[in-house]
Length: 628
Image 1: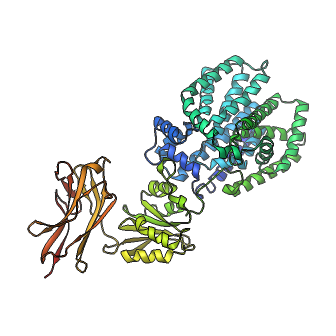
Image 2: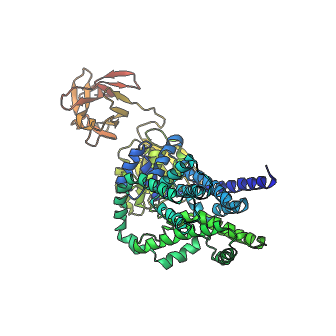
Image 3: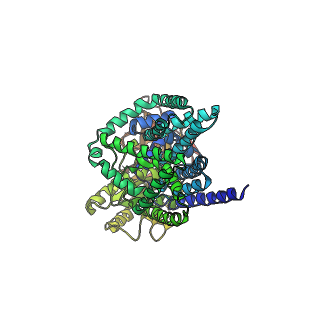
């Protein structure tokens, strides 16, 4: 290996490591934002990883203005690494690193290694681009496919010969671009502009057009799905009202793509003028045409179809690799380039790191989160991992109602962190409401659940914290602390008649219905037996087919007391709590039992008490004695 090749190889290793460090920094530090939750939902996070047809069905119903490639790849990735936000965001980071490497390859083949390494560095330290190394969104994939397709395009139109696999790759990457994001059409506008202006110099001009046409045909089956969503979004008044005009777009885009350091436009403009005069390298003029074509066509599109506001500058992302290559080449145009190169890079990198540090607070981050004023659920999920028990229900506090509002797919952000990550039930006391209203809702939130985990920040206790604790302690026993940190406490509570470390007592019925836990206690003072059972059904149709009966039997097996039988669909799931009066029963020994039976044939269902090791169609819950 030549010394120069080795130098650039080491430089690229350093650039890639830097890109990894920047992309991985705080990768798990912030909660998912709204669009990330939608991405996961369309991949199957609340079920199992979707196959392609399920992804298409989900997008058609819930996100018809999107296309399926990224969501399908994400579902396959989740099948390998799981659904945690860290592992899912890592996919975007991995794609981003491939983007950096392929940008180097593209620029090296088109120009030279020095320009290629500089372009890779500029792209790596672009705050605009780095933003999307962090998100469970399709934009890093869009960038990667843009660079790969542009690389194949230049090869097809410049090389002496083109092999079959080159043509196949060219068609596949073009189709993949369309299935990654429909706004990739503007990449084809930029490349097509170069294709038209250099008609006489381009090899295989008509063959390339035919290959593009073939890629477009590959997208036709999905076009009706997309058009329905696109036309619906086009009619949203709020989007049209907030869309920016062409001068506003140009002004603010000019700030974004130079990392907020607008003074950098001065050397870029002067060096562009110098490069055009010298005409030293025609390829850079062609890159300029492609980049300009993407930018100007998007601005023109927005004039006729107002869509891009300050939160949607991401639609211009596909232009960034071309801009990085353009700037990298311009920086080496003067003979004494180092006098411009070093200050330019320092300012560029400083601006990029500043934007990266701002994160969500950057004005153009595009992260329109409705999840403000909710607890850091990602920290909860991380801290409680492997510390709760199977039937525990988390109870937390939130200032905003959004924490458990059901969004697309009928799921909330809390359903992801507690339901998917921890596989636990959850409820939240909303603290921005009156204390009396919040406490009134507490019984509904707890819903007779015998096992609770109270989760809160000890440094930011809500005003009603004391009242909530008092209400819990009236019915529950405080057990061990599961998490004890400066900013997070998680404490377990159980019904006050239970031991903190009791084992569950499940019943498994032959028809697949399951009692996940059961217990009963006799209160001689109140003359009642309280029975608590937790239910799961194998098939929702069973809710309509079976009834449950709670009875008190005498020592000789006679039914001496019974509450009205309940259909399983009638508020029995998940926890069914009843009190049976023993008032008037004669002194003696009794047992409370449970019976599950078919509501139509009245046939009892046989079950196995897995804790006691017994089975039958009448299963005991507790025994008790009424004294004389």
